Structure formats: structure tokens, C-alpha cells
Length: 610
Image (cartoon, rainbow, N blue to C red; front, top):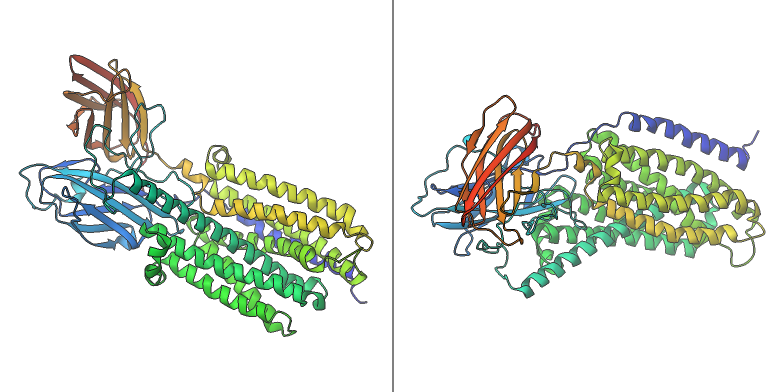
């Protein structure tokens, strides 16, 4: 007995539900994801003072990074660069540059690297070489306590240290590392960039970075829109709608626009990524494109997507032909884009990358079937007047079944992704930018579901007499544009699971003579650095002549740590050994201008990395 359209729709829905059953283990096996790539330690330690000039600067990261577009940059007291070429070892997780730090004074270190999920991570810190030092080698780094950059201090601070790193992909600030800068009364280090410290230079740099960030976000948005629409159109053309209509001039125009979006979005992502990683403008980044493609994983993925965009554009230009090759090439191009985006994004850093990548590709593909179908309804199949003919009405009914199954797949894989990116801790979705953006996306998706349900229950039945289902599809496409915009923001925002990672300790306390900013970094068992900035009762820097500190843990006697003064109000102990995790008590006593200050603060020290 021949299969009717109604029964074929049921078969299609059953197949989609079977796919969902296969995807359910992705959610059940989700576990806390690996940490977003972050700086683990620096040698020399931030704000340390050296009698013996270091021969190199070394940064250790929690995961391999690419340095071809950035690397290390060390500027000496005279404003000239003193670093040699940047090299990597330990699989790319350790970055080193030889330096010539013979002259006494303050040395500024800035760095920029690209993580495995395409995020640009950058930052800076300073160290000092005292008078009378020589160019002898630094002691073995294994004896030097590691100290990492700290997150921005609390807003309660009268004069908070200025964070100098902007680890982004690039739209948003993230909870990735930043390094506290010296206080306002300390002499600022030389700018490791162009050397322009004027307000005009700062404004220009801000405008450039904002432009690059905007281009990167728009490029991701356009790329997502193009791949979802083209993927859905191919599926619609092959299995759902009348082939003659889906090979019409109007359909070819929509397909061409979607393919062009893939190509332009990929080009924009590559260019903005290179500009962000190298700290240059979009025009200045053009000569570095070949280095990015040949030397970085993120650049290689962008190049693959550009080639996929070219293939998709070629298929779209031949869209009206009956050859099955057109659909095969277009669908292959879309699949390459989907897989590449997953491999170069957040899923690649999950605890089980294969499952996370598979889930992400399934999520994207199901969204394409849904969104591309809406584009077909609203932009291609929509009748000029009245209702649809019976053949088009049949396509609408089949799409209604396909959309229902696609929504189920989108929901299941979306929950799995949220579980991965929140580290299996839903509370992080309420306290992070990632979570807030995800909630906005969910609200928009809920609006889409409401419109889709209205279509399915009220409008599809009247499709032969009313064009309501097609008008609603166009309205849904407007909401879809907003959904894709928030999705692009999510991709460019570090996942919510970052909130679960150990943080450097930062607090502002009262010592009886004023306020003190206290930063202990990285607040992990092992080597740490203690930063103290003193303020008077009105929030101005307070000069301190003598400062002493001790650290203690339950069952252990207090142990003195050596504090060094970098300015009258800014003191640092770059070598604080806290060998075990748990709660440590830091006690500080200070004396300056006949004012004695004293405070005690408890710090929770986390397990060491790895």
C-alpha cells in the first residue's frame, strides 16, 4: 500500500524522536567541563623586585595556546623592547621569551595568546630590577613561587587596581585572568604598545577594539544565519516542498544570500580574530591573515569555513538546476561549517569533547531544519494572494511535523549544552553574563515556540484558504534574527562554568587607620603573591613606612612573609608559600605617619592546578 503524506509525516517524526533518544546520553553523561584556558603562573612573579636580573619571562597556561599573532612583549625602563622571539613548550601551554633586563628599573610585560576555543586572552604585569643587579641567570624556576593574575577587585575598593587584560573572543569582558596594576601614586610603566599614553591615544585604541569586537560579533551572527537558512533550504528542497517551487528564482536568491552570508561571515571572523589577537586595527591585520591560517588552529578553522562558503555560493548559483549535486555540495558545505564551529568553540573544551561537539552539531542542524523551513515558508512558498494550492499546503503540513521534531532535538541538545557550559551547576546561569544571555535566548525561543504552536494548531489547517501561516513565518524570522544575535553573544562569552573555577582572593578591609585592598593570587596551594594597597579614611593613598605580615593555618604557628614596598602605599610579598589547601589567616600590621594599622583576614586556598 502506498505511503500517504500523513503517514510519511508520522514516519519522519518517529525517526526524529529516535534521534533524540540517541542524543539523550549526551545529557546523562554530561560532567563538569574543563576550565576555560587561563594563566596559571608567571616567572618573574607580578610586581616582584629582583636583585638578579631575569634572563627570560615565562608564562604557564592551563591549556595549550597559540602565540603566532601575539606572544610576549617586554618593555624596559627606557621604553624600548628588550624581549627576543616568543617560543612555546610543554605542548603549547608554556610561553617563554628571552629578555635583556640589565638596566635597573621597572619592566612591563604584556602578552596576548589564542586559546583552543578561539578566545583571545591578554594581560600585563610589571617587575622591577634593583640598582646593582647584573645579567646573571634567574634561580631555577622550580624554586620560584608561581603567581598568577587576579580578577578585578571588588567595587567597594576606594581606588581599585586597574585590570589590564581583556581576554575575549571579543565581544565581552570575561572572568579570565587580569593582573593588578600599581596604585595611582606609583609611577606608571611604559606602554608596551605604541607608546602613546595620551588621552587621544587611549580613545583611539578603545575605538579600534570596539570596532573589532563589533565586527567579530556581527560576523558570527551572519555566519550562523547563513548556515542555518541554507541548511534548512536544502532539506526543504530535498524532502519537504515541491521541487519546482524550491528551485525557483526566488528560492535561488534566498539560497545565494545565505551562501554569501556564510562566506562574508567567515571572512569577517578571520579578519576580526587576527586584529583582536595581534592588537591591531582591521586594516593593519590584513597582512597577518596568512600567518593566522598557517600558524593557528582558529585561523585554520576560519579558512576551512571560507572554503565551505565558496562551495556553498557555487551551489547556490546553480540552485535552479535539477542536478542532485547542487544539494549535496550545499549540504556538505553547511555541515563543514557546523562541525568547524563546534570544534573551534566552547564544545572543544568540554570534559568529553566528542559528546559536546556531537551535541552542538545536532543542535545546529535541528535549528537549521526549523529556521530554514521558516525561511522557505515566509520567503519562497508564500502565495501572492489568498491561500496556498494543495501541493504547497502538503509541504506546509510536512514541515509542521518536521519542525515539531526539530524543536524536540533543539531542546534536548540545548539542555545538554547548558549543563556542560554551566559545569552541571545551574546556579551559575543566574550569576554570570553567559547565564543572563542564555536566559534572554530562552525567552526568545519561548516566543518562537508560542508562534509555532499557534501555526500548528490554528493556521496549518486553514492554509488553503488563508496566508496566515506564511505571515506568521515572516514574523518568526524576525524573532529568529534576535535568537541568532544572542547565540553569537553566547559564543563570544566565556561559559558559566568559569564561575566554578578557583579565583584569586580580593577584598577590602578596615585596619583601623583606613582601608586596605588585599589581593592574594592565585589563592591556590603552592606559590602565591600578596598585594596590599593602603588608603586613608577619605580614600586617598596612605603612605606606610613599615609593614609586616604573617600567614597561619589551623594547627600551625604563624609564619612571617617578607613584604616589599613598591611605593609608599603599595606593598607586595611575591613569594608566599601556602603548601596546603584550606583556610589560611593573613595578619598585617602597618605603621606610617604615627598611624598604626592592623587587620586579620581569612583566605580560602584552593587545590593546585592539575
